[in-house]
Image (cartoon, rainbow, N blue to C red):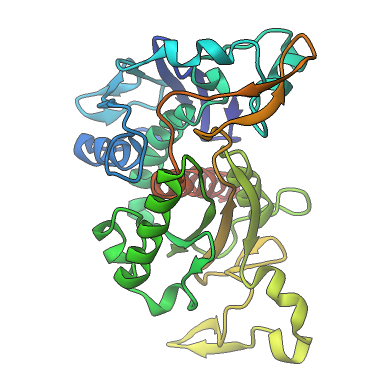
Length: 356
């Protein structure tokens, strides 16, 4: 399953230390003006080496389009693209060739395929998400005419978290901090924690929150194609993601129906809701309100500390990992969360248009 989507479909390929990472997008509407500065900007938000909080691997991650584009616009035919890898340190992984990193995909890939690429994790590397960001950037451009805007931000690192919901913050300030948190004071605390963890050769996880505004009513497929299920699937395909909740999520379990129901009202001549505990989705179908959700990321599995593990020969051993690794994935994962949301919403918008 290297393909995502029903109508707007992305197939990605490539490994962390192979020649490059690329993809093929099928089902993209024709006539979309490709803003190359915007697309490259989305890649820059994901790229390594952008701050002291990320891996120092130095990759420019410049995309090259191979097909499906003419005079700067999409043609409706498959869009092929590639980003060449230029800064691999494959020797850093020589000592991991026959050793399984705890909580990593090394063991499961070996047992599934009987072979694995140990360099940077191979196909299991988060570098694969380059393809998602490119396809997501194009999806964002396709969603613009419909007034759909997607913004994600870091809302928690370790125990440090934002206590209020997205409406209490100016999300346009998210890019002002290295950790991509819209609250400068909390951002400073988060960055200090990441620096502390990094100095100890360890890693830390957290939560990314995301909101989609301007989503029209009617997106979502009953019964097994519910919109929130599709968003959950999209987020859970991202490396290191351990949980997904939308609307009030697990907190909804604390309330009675009389407290939690979103009462319908008439606002400026249109049906709306007084509250939005549902997170913009009811019965698996968008209701026109903001869609908001949270994505939980675990700490990075590869740590620069000694760990007890086993090798392919079934012997217990000590792993001393080398290489360049993120102490926290959250800052670079923000654009990935946005991209997967954009892929999902555009796909479901196109599905809905087949009924019109």
